[in-house]
Length: 351
Image (cartoon, helix red, strand yellow):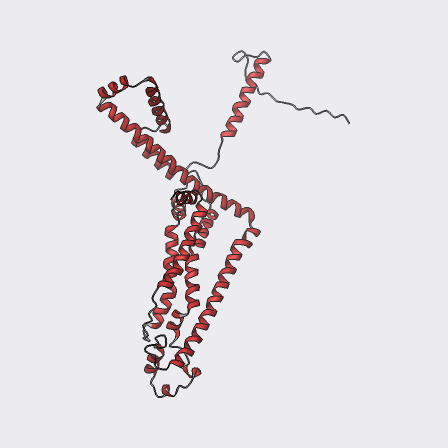
């Protein structure tokens, strides 16, 4: 149980590995569903084509939408796309990269379903048995005196061995259609593999700088949202703890004072330290209206992606160095006006 817990924590910490695992599970689930699925062709000319093509198309669409539902980055993409611009501009290339990444992972299970269905050939046989030229598969003397409607009904029964009397013709027609279906399946696999190769290998070679930029900022958006959620959870936990603590202090003040008299000094120090740590985690936000304003401002006007801490530290250090140099040279603040000081670097050469 501990191993599964550690594996789940690792997948949660690594978003890309987690989504790759989800895609692999969905692909295995699609193959397992097809193997356990009971294929029942209606063997009627009005419904054969609809049933066969529907089996080939509708489950992949469902798997594709399920891939979007299970992908956590969909909400990140929608939030980034619909948020107000504020102080942070939107980069369409980052949004396009995130959408393409989600789409690529969501296409794995549908592609596997289509390939397995084409390799099996049952849906292809059900859909196109009516269009066969049955004269190519043996003695068709019984077929000549039939009307067009009767021929269609007879051809529609080829996928059903219990309803078609001429087994030799049925076996030959079934092999013919399954051969075509498998050829289409291999062509589909080749096209998908070649397309994946072009996307994964060739595209970064031409636009490596843009690819790295979009990949970096897409990861940043995902990590920023996670850290914001974690900070909100920590703040909510500390807020609830302090609120409950103050409630019990106000309601049962006498019992709290009696309890403090009985406890030792170490327990009181620990309680004060815990209380101080919870107060620090509140980050100065101690009211519901203030928290709502902070959350609203985060949504409507996110801060710009321009960190100025190093620049401010450099300015403070330069001011401090100027003050020390002025004091060392005999200048006191207040007696002389502050003047700009220029530093000159002289280089000597021994050549």
